Image 1 (cartoon, rainbow, N blue to C red):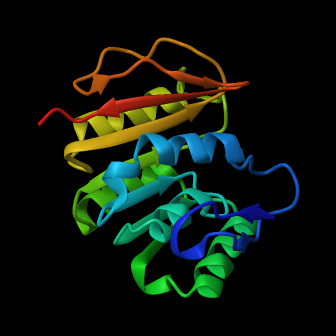
Image 2: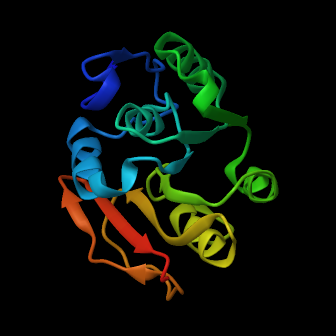
Length: 188
């Protein structure tokens, strides 16, 4: 079980899939993320990529975000995500997309308004077509209209590395044990 740390659903427990298909963001990383972006959450539109149980997007809704969209490919986490949204009564504030992130990003870009915050927690250090999934996410978001001007992309990754140059403003990564949190801002 995963606990919601703040806001309307503070203290509520979220279902998490059993097994090794997902690796939920640790409580330390989630708390740090929301300490960093606390001034950006109220009224925001959130996109939670590789959502798992939906803990990041649900935490954002709990803290005042207006809307969260979730992308998850695996069946067990999808089921937990749907159960969590239903249990908390926030289904009307959410869109859930099932399938591969890279197949769905163009669909989401056409269907939805730009997001204030995008959070990506891909499998750590996993490569696809010769690059880390994290690098593909950064390149895709930087070249798309998914992130609102002035919006922020957060990427959680398993070790420190240098991202390729990007049009997004890059902040120094923050380290939480074996996890690194990268922040990229769309320049206004």
